[in-house]
Length: 394
Image (cartoon, rainbow, N blue to C red; front, top):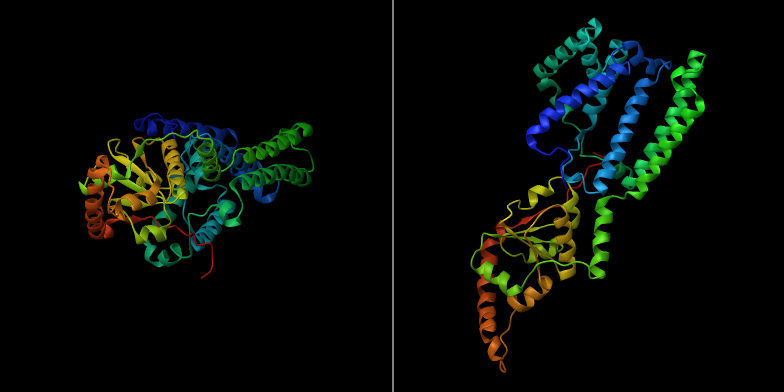
């Protein structure tokens, strides 16, 4: 899935210009003024809520859309880990500081950058707070690391699909815009001129609600992609490079370091019997964070995809290919055929065709050799265990 920045060397350059643009937008939105920022707490100005809510909504729909069209690899997206008690305590401290000081850390830098004294004082206070935390870390360490919940996503926590959560979040955004407008009018005793004419603002909220509906049109790739691939396999539209059980056996016997085996069988089957230099994966693992580290990036390495049967291996191969990997081979007939023709091969007692004699002799020898190799290398094989997110409890 292609990066949005064409070269690694441009990361800092793009980041610099994005930072300047972000700071400009903050200042133009009035976020360098503490009176406007704290207006949200007193009910007379909800600009802060509207700006950040809009930013979150745009980013969410963008991520869903880019992931759906293959422009963003979600397995590479970093999800901030959640430590419950430090998040609660930190949120309370920041909220209190926000109300008292009139800034959050980001907006204080914006205010300081244009020379506002209160913004500069707030930045100095933030640095002092960082120093206190660093020096007193042994005292805070317990609560800092307590109640680890993992890399939590709201859709998973609520047990709903990503599309449904996106829609609900957009609906909540549209409703909050209308509600905050009503609150402002009540508190200020007059309509907000920025939000006039009222019909236009209501229309804008309706557009947000309709955009939320688009999340259902752009389903989660982890669910939609396997279904799409299975349908293509059933229609005979998938073609992949194959490797026969005999060729794979020969490469194993010769200790070929130019191959890497990806085994998509159930974990219990992999634990009973696994080929040398193999790693056990599930289809879901290909969509998760760190999947790129599991797949050999060296283009010269032959990536052998195996499963119980050929169709299951084809499904995994197509998803890996869609992530941009090359040099992929599917084990012909699946692991079942490899077991029948190699691992459990029995030489026919008689009537052996002359043209198959060499093949049968190879298989007979290979069955014993590979059995020993498997025994010697069993400890080196890797099982990718399913990561379970802790969602509460003690």
